Amino acid sequence: MLEVHDVRFVGSTSDPDWHPDPPRPEIAFVGRSNVGKSSLLNTLCRRKKLAHTSKTPGKTRTLNYFDVDGTCYFVDLPGYGYAKRPMAERERWGPMMEAYLSGNARLAGVVSLIDSRHPPTRLDQRMVEYLASQEIPTLVVLTKADKVGRGQRADRLGRMTERLGVDPDQMVWFSSLSGEGRDEIFTAISHLVESEAA
Ligand SMILES: Nc1nc2c(ncn2[C@@H]2O[C@H](COP(=O)(O)OP(=O)(O)O)[C@@H](O)[C@H]2O)c(=O)[nH]1
Ligand SMILES: [Mg+2]
Image (tube, rainbow, N blue to C red):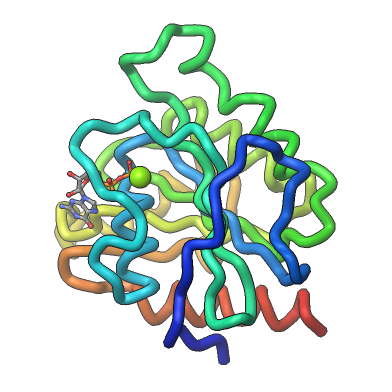
């Protein structure tokens, strides 16, 4: 099982072909800006300020690498769909992300974050479809689960699976406020890393 005793920031790059040394399995995190990606990374690594959490989204334009206990790298990808960016930029996730995701032999899997309070956006759908088309193992994390009552969950999950075309087993509810889902996500990531390392 993957452990997180020591997580270190390795570096930021805007070159999708750059990878840290030594080579290790990479787990990438994607989602629209403000979905709660930094909060998830901080919760997974049990650190308050590992990844910058902010109320002014859309600032991260680089790939940010974190070394997780010398076992794998977490890669924080730029948030997509930030409303205050020009339309052309907002409507795509950018060549840099696509270049990173496609044909990346080190990529063990992608954690795709979707805001559970709303239906998935068109970009969310396109991202999940793209990952499936590339046959990249994908875990869909439904963020801000504390905002969705237990009574609404089954219905919400059903609509998400339908719109995203993924299996319910690939989806996990997550809240950085309550910690719900943290262990399940962690276990799923461990399996991805182990299958890649094997
Ligand atoms: N209610 C709730 N709010 C959250 C949760 N996770 C993040 N947020 C809030 O959503 C906003 C964006 O979070 P952040 O992690 O910076 O998102 P990022 O832009 O995807 O990295 C911040 O105001 C967070 O406090 C959550 O699990 N529950
Ligand atoms: Mg962030």
